[in-house]
Image (tube, rainbow over all chains, first blue to last red; front, side, top):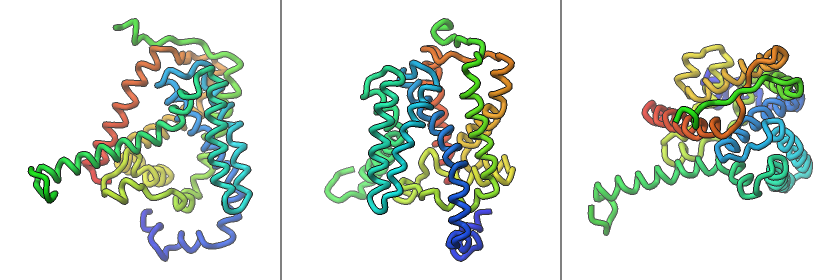
Length: 144
Length: 139
């Protein structure tokens, strides 16, 4: 199956056709449905871990659904997606804070934590690599 | 210790039905997209951590796991990313069962402090174990 994604494959040529993009547009309501459920679960999980899920998953879903309206900004060419993303962030943080009766800070942490966790993994790896280089004496000017 | 980690439960109520149906619709949407998975996978961005360091991030292999699941190859999906595979299969099963479960007034865990405590232990542990597996396997 992985060979389907190699350059010059049938999947790549289909990716460049107009029919594919029309099909993708037709599928987008389904994609939004899947994304909404997965996003709600992930967001509610992080809210629970932070002790901020005061009013159940329905409140998280409601806040997320309203925040998705920001994606309408994507119809503006160029900067629309970026503005939509920032607007979405503002709406989701405000919405979660109001819906669950928690502070804006806690809501922001719940939204940003999944992204930050990946960053933390990166920092741990960098420190690990730096430590390994130092101990091997590969860094000039730093004694092992 | 047993009281601080004891999960509290409640019976499902009629007002839980909309959320249950929405979960079922979300899962059904996901299954309807299965035939298009190979094409949609091209939208998945490359992992920055893996590109820069060669080391997988905790979610690396997710796209390949989804593609293997779409081909009903569960063992291969598990080998690409066990956590994502188990989570997706669990979500799909729970999503489909949710409306019937609510209609039957089945027990649901309360999202109380005990549940949050369990989650604070289990979620990072599962994520870390999955990441270690991915690093050792070299996904």
